[in-house]
Length: 279
Ligand SMILES: C[S@@+](CC[C@H](N)C(=O)[O-])C[C@H]1O[C@@H](n2cnc3c(N)ncnc32)[C@H](O)[C@@H]1O
Image (cartoon, rainbow, N blue to C red; front, side, top):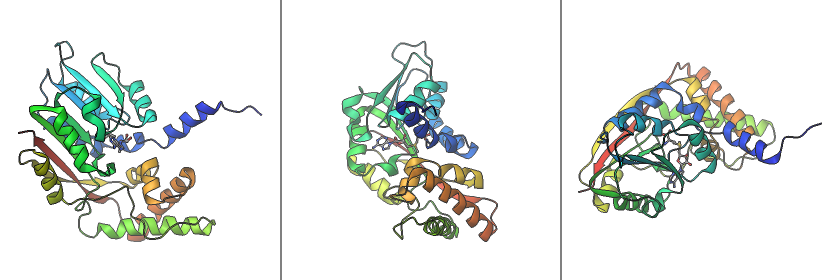
């Protein structure tokens, strides 16, 4: 029997559990396109795409820029080598530089820029004060930070909390029936969920001017939730300690069950969009 070389199988695993599937959904592209359009990018701006992931937002930023103007550039930063590898495959532009690193060290990774775009990742950062301080230092005076997230206190409109609870409950039941040990009471996603007011206070404390804040409701289809349930960081957040392939299967089963039991055709969910200027 022939075996796949070790590094190739690692690449395949990382690609399989990447964020790319979820990022293809229309509502997701729309949320990011709104933010990019409202972050004050001009045709000759210098921009950081912080937490660039597989590069979909890098492409949106490039559409706003004129590559022929000297000084125009994009620094696409992410701590994940596999996400950067996908982004490199996807984005081919002479003005984009890919840099491995995290928000907490941003100012030491890139020169000062006009705009920092930071989509769908702030909730993954444990030390948000340091991350915002680093972004502040990275921005020129008058520069703009645009960030968004759907993992914040306020993301679940109406009764939708019930759906997420049932989703995880059904996934956990599926796992237990197969002999997997899962800790109870885990929230179906990554780290800390801040309120809108807590984000405002953080930005103010770091020195940003009063931000523009919008809540935008999106309709998440069953397929899109199945896709987020295949993303490694989501699986680790929802079902800690469970192997990724098993967790992904359990979450797929859980989504389908929850949709059927609650007779849903979609789940509404809020995106928080924030645009803040460095005073
Ligand atoms: C959900 S993906 C978002 C990708 C892209 N921004 C988008 O909206 O399509 C989250 C990304 O945040 C990155 N990330 C996690 N922790 C981070 C940190 N401390 N600083 C910067 N990026 C981080 C992950 O590696 C991942 O690529």
